[in-house]
Image 1: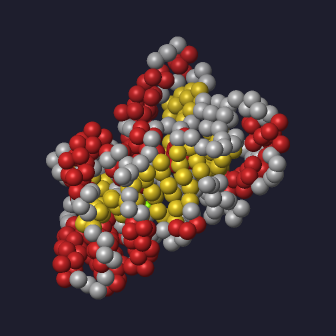
Image 2: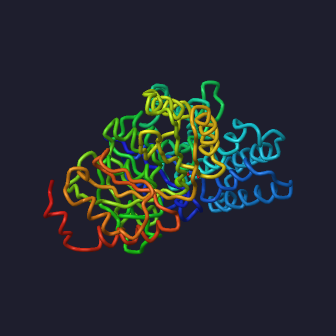
Image 3: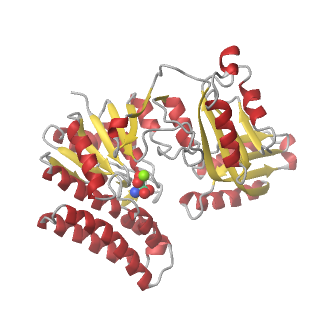
Length: 459
Ligand code: ASP
Ligand code: MG
């Protein structure tokens, strides 16, 4: 029988009622033999605060109390069975020890230990709920399988190791029982706990689906699929019934919040169909992401990525030094920075990088910029958003670029990337303009029928 991995996000497991809807979804699909859960909504944010901020012990206690109240409310909903109460209290006492650990703020390994607790608690509670609803389930420690490097906070999975461990430890169990495991967490070679970066639970689900040759991977969240754009930007946004792997990867990379950017990578490698839907309203369906789609429109969706930094690296000698670009990219690669937009002129290269404050990324950016300064003049400009139109054959269809640029002709586009990839056109805009730009483009590309330039100008 074909295997399905079901992942439930933080809001889906935020409380006992939300969890019950998830349990029904699991029980309703006999192909679901492995479940991946996020931490209950809010918990990871509290843990991140504990791990990163200089706090008084009173503030530490307050944050711990907030986490406890979320977890205990679920425990009470389960009628506080003694064996689960004991385990939950063990995890909470680990949390307390780590939260008060003197070296916490300087030790990335301790931070990841602390961050892992949200998922370890939610998976314990969700496994118990499934059992209480008559489904044979067990809590399973994802760290035994999700092997990673030791870049704490942003660990890179080791695909070959994961496949080995999954074969050995997971596959033989799936006949017998449904395993409920943690998203987001893994372990390095020395078995230290690591995390995959914020929102990493989707990635865990896709990695497990890959390792176990699953046919499908369901991402259950609080929206009924992937939308034409973020519904918080415009209420005209519409859910999409289908997306191709390429489109979904572009959307996730360029800011669609519903999927962790790396999620599509394992799915593409193993051709696993990915579903995104709402655990609260499963009857409303969702978005299926697959290799091929019934229709491949020029315009599928609009995404935005905030907190972009424009870095311009300039060397007067670039004219003569053909190795300059290579040097620049070598430095970026060494810091594992991926660059989304690049433009070059004879003496300069401009590129955009993500810069969420206080993140591992931000630290890597600072280090990278310092190194770039050793070989060139570096200018850093902040306050930009990256807006991306995702679709198909955009580079070869006449009229696509003029259609898009005409709609937003009154705005200043600081940097444009067009032509390198058939699935997107991206531009960098002032962050104060991006909402209006997306609304305008959405109206032009998705709210008008028929779209003349679609049909008239097939390239
Ligand atoms: N709990 C983690 C986070 O909030 C991972 C996840 O939810 O995917 O970032
Ligand atoms: Mg999440």
